[in-house]
Image 1: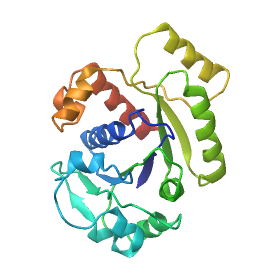
Image 2: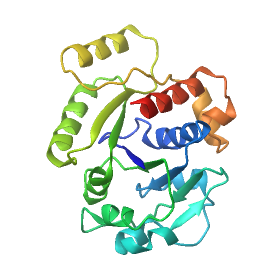
Image 3: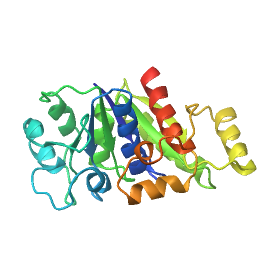
Image 4: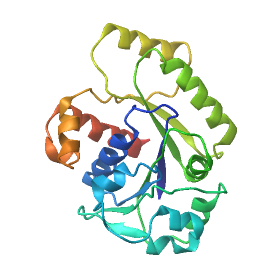
Length: 236
C-alpha cells in the first residue's frame, strides 16, 4: 500500500478537493483506496459518508490503533473505503497511525490522508506513514513563502522514505502564473509535478452535487487533469 498525505500549511489550496478527486481517479484506474479524514472539518467525510451516521472515527484509531479495522466504512464507490473524521480529533503522540497500519487487515493499493493546514501531532502522524506528501499550491503572492515553510517541516519531520511532490492547482492561463511557476522550478528547484489542475467551475458544481469531477463531467478538462495527476503518481 502506498500512502499519500495531502498537505499544505496554507488553507484554500484545495487539499480536500484533491483528496476526493484523487481517490476517485485512482479507483477509476482499478486501484482500491482507503481515505483517512484527518481534518476536523470532516469535509471528506461529508462527501463520501452520511453526515449523521454513527460509529467509530479516526479519533478511535488514534486512541486505540489496534481498532483500525473496526473504523473502516464502505462508501457508495465499491473500491473506496473511508475512516471518517471527527470534529474532536486530537492526539498526544506522533506514531498512532503507524501503529494502526501494522494492524490493518484489508489490502489497499493506496491510502489517501486528508490533513488540515496546521502542523501539529495529527499532521506529524500523516508524515510518519506517508510514502508521498502531495502539496497542492495556488500561484499567488504568498506561494514562495508558503513553500519555504512547508519545505522546512518536510526536512525536519518527514520519514526518510517519503517523497515530496508539488502540483499546481486552480491554474489559469495567465502570464503571472506562468512566471511564478518558472521561478519555482528554475530558481528554487522544487519537486513540481508535470500535471497541473485547471481552475474550473466544474469542480464547484461537482462538489455541490457530492460527485467527483470525473463522475460529474468525465470529459471536461479538469476531470482529465485529475486523472492525469493520478496516472503520474501511479507511474512515479
